[in-house]
Length: 152
Image 1 (cartoon, rainbow, N blue to C red):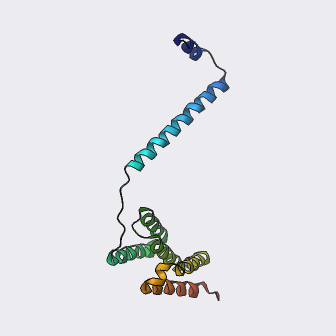
Image 2: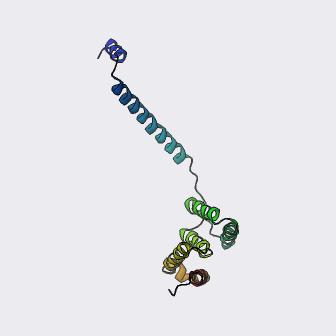
Image 3: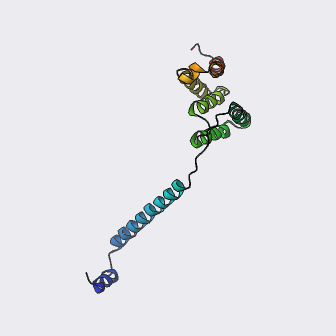
């Protein structure tokens, strides 16, 4: 294809529908390229997060989250989600904190969620091996069931 043919093609008056379709195609390509660049940038800058394995660190994180839950349960749940996605706390610990926050509520849906999460936590090997953790889960379950008021 000659260079003059390319210029002639772009200089032709196009129907408005064709112009709109062409603009939409350019916009779609631009959006796709922007998303790819953002994903590559975020993926390349990700750093490895250290898992909190020290019992003191875990206890301190638990206390911070529960203190935030007294003021605003929604912000505490956001903190738990960020701890879970960053890998700072194991998933079972994050689930326990979620259940504990849900168990402090008077909303029956939140209490049901606390009971369901607690029952699932009781089936984990970690809960069977660590007696202190098992006792914490059982206490949370008992409190949630008492507040729920059903005979479950």
